Length: 205
Image (cartoon, rainbow, N blue to C red; front, side, top):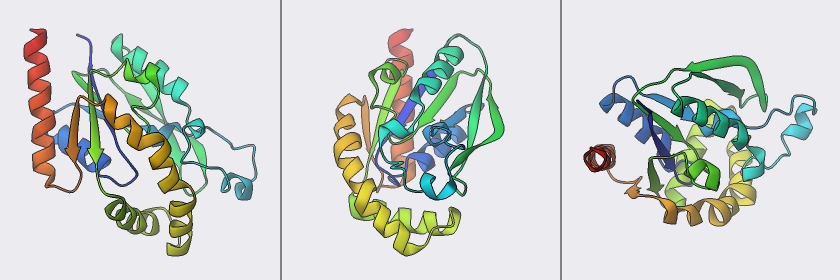
Protein backbone atom coordinates (compact mmCIF):
# COMPACT_ATOMS: atom_id res chain seq x y z
CA UNK A 1 0.00 0.00 0.00
CA UNK A 2 1.29 3.45 -0.94
CA UNK A 3 2.24 5.67 1.99
CA UNK A 4 -0.10 8.61 2.63
CA UNK A 5 2.27 11.60 2.66
CA UNK A 6 1.31 14.53 4.89
CA UNK A 7 2.97 17.88 4.27
CA UNK A 8 3.11 20.39 7.14
CA UNK A 9 4.22 23.92 6.18
CA UNK A 10 4.21 27.36 7.78
CA UNK A 11 6.56 30.13 8.92
CA UNK A 12 9.55 29.55 11.17
CA UNK A 13 8.54 28.55 14.73
CA UNK A 14 4.86 28.43 13.81
CA UNK A 15 4.48 25.03 15.50
CA UNK A 16 5.07 22.67 12.57
CA UNK A 17 7.39 20.32 14.42
CA UNK A 18 5.17 20.10 17.49
CA UNK A 19 2.15 19.34 15.33
CA UNK A 20 4.12 16.64 13.51
CA UNK A 21 5.14 15.04 16.81
CA UNK A 22 1.58 15.06 18.06
CA UNK A 23 0.44 13.40 14.85
CA UNK A 24 3.02 10.64 15.32
CA UNK A 25 1.52 9.95 18.74
CA UNK A 26 -1.86 9.48 17.06
CA UNK A 27 -0.50 7.58 14.05
CA UNK A 28 1.80 4.84 15.43
CA UNK A 29 4.66 3.80 13.18
CA UNK A 30 4.67 7.12 11.32
CA UNK A 31 8.00 8.81 10.56
CA UNK A 32 8.75 12.53 10.37
CA UNK A 33 11.04 13.88 7.66
CA UNK A 34 12.25 17.43 8.26
CA UNK A 35 12.98 19.76 5.38
CA UNK A 36 15.76 21.18 7.58
CA UNK A 37 17.67 17.93 7.00
CA UNK A 38 17.96 18.84 3.31
CA UNK A 39 20.00 22.02 3.48
CA UNK A 40 22.55 21.80 0.71
CA UNK A 41 25.98 20.56 1.75
CA UNK A 42 28.58 23.34 1.68
CA UNK A 43 31.38 21.63 3.52
CA UNK A 44 33.93 22.91 0.99
CA UNK A 45 33.15 26.51 2.03
CA UNK A 46 34.88 27.95 5.15
CA UNK A 47 32.62 28.10 8.22
CA UNK A 48 32.58 31.90 8.36
CA UNK A 49 31.40 32.02 4.73
CA UNK A 50 28.75 29.38 5.40
CA UNK A 51 27.31 31.53 8.16
CA UNK A 52 26.64 34.30 5.61
CA UNK A 53 24.45 32.12 3.38
CA UNK A 54 20.75 32.97 3.37
CA UNK A 55 19.28 29.77 4.81
CA UNK A 56 15.80 31.27 4.68
CA UNK A 57 15.68 31.13 0.88
CA UNK A 58 14.29 28.09 -0.98
CA UNK A 59 17.51 27.84 -3.01
CA UNK A 60 19.39 26.80 0.15
CA UNK A 61 17.53 23.49 0.20
CA UNK A 62 18.17 20.35 -1.80
CA UNK A 63 14.50 19.82 -2.59
CA UNK A 64 15.41 17.65 -5.57
CA UNK A 65 16.88 15.03 -3.22
CA UNK A 66 13.79 15.18 -1.01
CA UNK A 67 11.65 14.67 -4.10
CA UNK A 68 13.66 11.58 -4.99
CA UNK A 69 13.15 10.27 -1.47
CA UNK A 70 9.39 10.85 -1.55
CA UNK A 71 9.18 9.01 -4.86
CA UNK A 72 11.05 6.12 -3.22
CA UNK A 73 8.74 5.95 -0.20
CA UNK A 74 5.70 6.18 -2.48
CA UNK A 75 7.06 3.12 -4.28
CA UNK A 76 7.48 1.28 -0.98
CA UNK A 77 11.25 1.73 -0.74
CA UNK A 78 13.22 3.00 2.25
CA UNK A 79 15.54 6.00 1.95
CA UNK A 80 18.36 7.65 3.92
CA UNK A 81 17.41 11.07 5.28
CA UNK A 82 20.47 13.35 5.66
CA UNK A 83 21.48 14.60 9.12
CA UNK A 84 22.29 18.32 9.23
CA UNK A 85 24.38 20.10 11.89
CA UNK A 86 23.15 23.61 12.66
CA UNK A 87 26.22 24.24 14.77
CA UNK A 88 28.55 23.55 11.82
CA UNK A 89 26.22 24.77 9.05
CA UNK A 90 26.88 21.50 7.23
CA UNK A 91 25.62 18.00 6.61
CA UNK A 92 27.13 15.30 8.75
CA UNK A 93 28.29 11.90 7.51
CA UNK A 94 25.35 10.28 9.30
CA UNK A 95 21.95 9.45 7.83
CA UNK A 96 18.61 8.29 9.23
CA UNK A 97 16.82 5.37 7.58
CA UNK A 98 13.16 6.07 6.83
CA UNK A 99 11.18 2.89 6.33
CA UNK A 100 7.91 2.61 4.39
CA UNK A 101 4.81 2.97 6.57
CA UNK A 102 1.13 3.82 6.25
CA UNK A 103 1.82 7.53 6.84
CA UNK A 104 4.83 9.80 6.36
CA UNK A 105 5.00 13.40 7.60
CA UNK A 106 7.16 15.96 5.80
CA UNK A 107 7.47 19.25 7.70
CA UNK A 108 9.28 22.47 6.91
CA UNK A 109 9.05 26.08 5.79
CA UNK A 110 8.82 25.47 2.07
CA UNK A 111 7.09 22.08 1.92
CA UNK A 112 4.30 23.63 -0.18
CA UNK A 113 6.59 25.87 -2.24
CA UNK A 114 7.78 23.58 -5.06
CA UNK A 115 5.09 22.21 -7.42
CA UNK A 116 6.95 18.92 -7.76
CA UNK A 117 6.85 18.35 -4.00
CA UNK A 118 3.21 19.42 -3.72
CA UNK A 119 2.27 16.71 -6.21
CA UNK A 120 3.75 14.09 -3.88
CA UNK A 121 1.65 15.21 -0.88
CA UNK A 122 -1.70 13.57 -0.20
CA UNK A 123 -2.69 15.93 2.62
CA UNK A 124 -1.29 19.47 2.69
CA UNK A 125 -1.43 21.32 6.04
CA UNK A 126 -0.47 24.94 6.70
CA UNK A 127 0.19 26.16 10.25
CA UNK A 128 -0.85 29.80 10.59
CA UNK A 129 0.88 31.71 13.42
CA UNK A 130 1.45 35.45 13.97
CA UNK A 131 4.95 36.86 13.34
CA UNK A 132 5.44 38.14 16.90
CA UNK A 133 4.65 34.71 18.34
CA UNK A 134 6.97 33.08 15.81
CA UNK A 135 9.83 35.43 16.67
CA UNK A 136 9.67 34.84 20.42
CA UNK A 137 9.51 31.08 19.91
CA UNK A 138 12.48 31.17 17.53
CA UNK A 139 14.49 33.33 19.91
CA UNK A 140 13.98 30.82 22.72
CA UNK A 141 14.74 27.81 20.50
CA UNK A 142 17.84 29.12 18.73
CA UNK A 143 19.50 30.30 21.93
CA UNK A 144 18.72 27.09 23.82
CA UNK A 145 19.18 24.50 21.06
CA UNK A 146 21.36 26.00 18.32
CA UNK A 147 23.97 27.94 20.25
CA UNK A 148 22.98 31.36 18.87
CA UNK A 149 23.07 34.67 20.74
CA UNK A 150 19.87 36.72 21.18
CA UNK A 151 21.37 39.52 19.06
CA UNK A 152 22.25 37.17 16.18
CA UNK A 153 18.74 35.68 16.26
CA UNK A 154 17.13 39.14 16.11
CA UNK A 155 19.38 40.25 13.26
CA UNK A 156 18.73 37.10 11.23
CA UNK A 157 15.00 37.31 11.86
CA UNK A 158 14.73 40.87 10.55
CA UNK A 159 17.24 40.44 7.72
CA UNK A 160 16.10 37.12 6.23
CA UNK A 161 13.51 35.19 8.25
CA UNK A 162 10.65 37.68 8.21
CA UNK A 163 11.16 38.78 4.55
CA UNK A 164 11.44 35.14 3.47
CA UNK A 165 8.17 34.30 5.19
CA UNK A 166 6.46 37.16 3.40
CA UNK A 167 7.92 36.26 -0.01
CA UNK A 168 8.01 32.48 -0.01
CA UNK A 169 6.03 30.98 2.89
CA UNK A 170 2.83 32.96 3.47
CA UNK A 171 1.83 32.69 -0.22
CA UNK A 172 1.89 28.86 -0.02
CA UNK A 173 -1.08 28.82 2.37
CA UNK A 174 -3.36 28.81 -0.66
CA UNK A 175 -2.13 25.34 -1.62
CA UNK A 176 -3.13 23.74 1.68
CA UNK A 177 -6.07 21.36 2.05
CA UNK A 178 -6.24 22.37 5.70
CA UNK A 179 -5.16 25.50 7.61
CA UNK A 180 -4.71 25.19 11.38
CA UNK A 181 -3.71 27.72 14.02
CA UNK A 182 -0.30 27.39 15.63
CA UNK A 183 -1.50 29.46 18.57
CA UNK A 184 -4.43 27.28 19.61
CA UNK A 185 -4.04 24.14 21.75
CA UNK A 186 -2.16 21.41 19.86
CA UNK A 187 -4.95 18.95 20.56
CA UNK A 188 -7.30 21.03 18.42
CA UNK A 189 -5.02 21.26 15.38
CA UNK A 190 -3.95 17.62 15.70
CA UNK A 191 -7.57 16.46 15.78
CA UNK A 192 -8.34 18.61 12.74
CA UNK A 193 -5.59 16.88 10.76
CA UNK A 194 -6.70 13.41 11.92
CA UNK A 195 -10.26 14.24 10.84
CA UNK A 196 -8.97 15.32 7.42
CA UNK A 197 -7.10 12.02 7.08
CA UNK A 198 -10.27 10.09 7.93
CA UNK A 199 -12.19 12.04 5.28
CA UNK A 200 -9.48 11.32 2.71
CA UNK A 201 -9.56 7.64 3.62
CA UNK A 202 -13.34 7.52 3.31
CA UNK A 203 -13.23 9.28 -0.05
CA UNK A 204 -10.68 6.80 -1.36
CA UNK A 205 -12.51 3.75 -0.07
